[in-house]
Image (cartoon, rainbow, N blue to C red):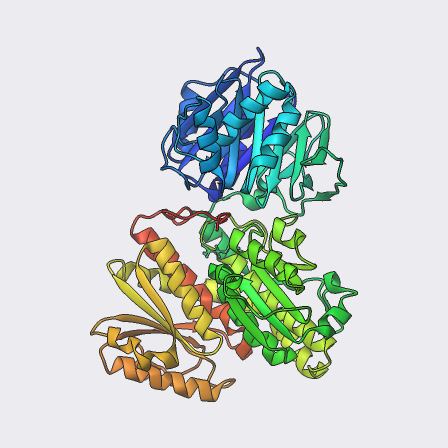
Length: 616
Ligand code: M6R
C-alpha cells in the first residue's frame, strides 16, 4: 500500500530516492520521507505530510547532507492519519537507525504494550514505529544488526516489507518481506531496493525478486539473501522487459490519458506469441495439459476492476471450454468455506500481483489442494510466485490509480486462456477458434478507431454533464461487467454516485431510481451478432425512456434500431459478441476521465485510493 525505495552505491542517494519515490507514488501519496547515512556517518531524515512534491520542495530548499546510502517511503495511511509524525521513516529510540514499512503489523498492539512497559515512548500513531523501536532494542541486546533485524522480522505478524539503515553500518541497507513486495535492482557498483521495479528502472533492468519470509543484506557490490533464520536461499534474477519511458507521462496530460491511448498496444502485446497456426497456444502453459484436463471447475478470484474482467472471463471460459466457472470477490472467498479441491482451478486476476485480498485467496486455495493460475501484469510479483502457473498480461506499467489498459489486457488474457482451454479439452471447434483468434487480432485497430472517432464526442458529453450527480449504466451478457466498470471509473475518478446493473434486473427494483433527466448509459450488443439480446435491451431502453431517463447508448456502427430512443449515440465497430467489452469500455473510461478533468480533479491520484491494496 506504500512505496519503498532503497539505494547504496557511489552516487548521492537523495535524488535517486526521490526519483524512485516519484515512480512509486501511485502506491500511496499522503506523505513521504527519506533517510540517508551521510558521508560523515550520521543519520539524517526528512519527512512531510502531503504529496511527494511537498517533501521534494522542502529538500530542494534545505537538502540533507550528501550520503550514498539511503531509504525512502511514500505512504498510504492505515494506522494514524497523514501527518509529519506518522510519515516514514521511523527512528529507533537513539536516533541512529531509520526504518520504513509497508503493510500491517497485526500484533503491533501487543508489541507496543511490551515496549511501553520497558519505558519506550512513541512519536507516531503507526504500527510501523513499533518495528523501529524493537529493532533498536534488539540491536542493543544482540550487538549484531543483521541478527537484530532477523529477530524483529521473526516477531512481527501480518504483512510487512521492512527496510532499514543504521549509522553503525554505512553502506548497508537491510530488507525483509512477508506478504508484501520487495524487489532488488542489481546495478554496477550500486544496488537498489523497491516495492516494484519502477523504483529503479531508470538505473538498471536487472532485477531479483525476494521470496516470502526472506531477508536481504545489500551493499554497493553484493546482495545476500537468507530466510528469517539466516539460512542462505536460492535466488534468480530476471530482466525487466519494459523501459523507463514506459512509466513516464511523456507529453500526455495525465498517466490515465496515456494509458487509455496505449490500449491497442496492450491487447496486441497480450496476444502476441500466443497464436500458432490460427489456434491459441500459451507457451507458459506448456506441459500443463494434464492439469487443465483434470479440472472440473474454475473459480476466479479478484477485486475491483480485475473482478469485472473476471466476469467477462466467466462468459468466455464457459462458452469456449464448457468448464463451469464461478466468480468470487477475493476478500469474500476464504471466509465463506468455498467447496474447492484438487479438481478446482482457482484463477486469480491482479494487475499488481500484490493485492492482499487476492493473495490470501490464492494461498487459501492452495491449502485446500486446488490448482492455481495467476493472470498478472507485474513480473516477479507475489501472487504469480505463489501460483502453480502464470499467464502475464503485457500491458506495460500502469501508473494511474484507476485501471484502464490493465483491464483491457486482463480481459484479453482471459479470452486467450479460454481459447487455449477449449482447444486442450477438445471442445472448441478449430474453425470457430480460428474465427475468434482472427477477431481478437483485429481488436487493436478497432480500439484505435474508437479513440480516433469518439474521443472528442465523449469529452464534449462529459463537459456538458459536469454537474451530474448520479449516473446509471446498463448492460446484458458481457455488457453487464462493462456497466460495472463504467460505474466504478466514474465513482473513483469523478466522485459521482454511479451504479452498474444487468439491464434485465432493472425492472426488479432499480428502475425506481429513474426520474426525468436521469442519465443512463446503455451498452447495446450487436443486432447482427446477438439479435435476441439486442431486442431485449432495446425494450429495456424503452422502459427507462418512458420514465424520463436521458439515454446515452454505446452501439455498433450502423445500428439504427436504437436511434429513436437515444439522446446520444456513441459508436463502436462491429466485433464478435464476446469481444464487445474491449471496445465498449473505452468511451466509458474517456467519459470518467473527462468528467473528472472538467471538475478540476486529479485523474491519476484520486482521493483516498492507492494503486495496490496490500492490506486486507
Ligand atoms: O492490482 P489489482 O488488479 O489486484 O487491483 C485490484 C483492484 O484494487 C483495482 O482493480 C481497483 O479496483 C482499481 N482502482 C480500479 O480502477
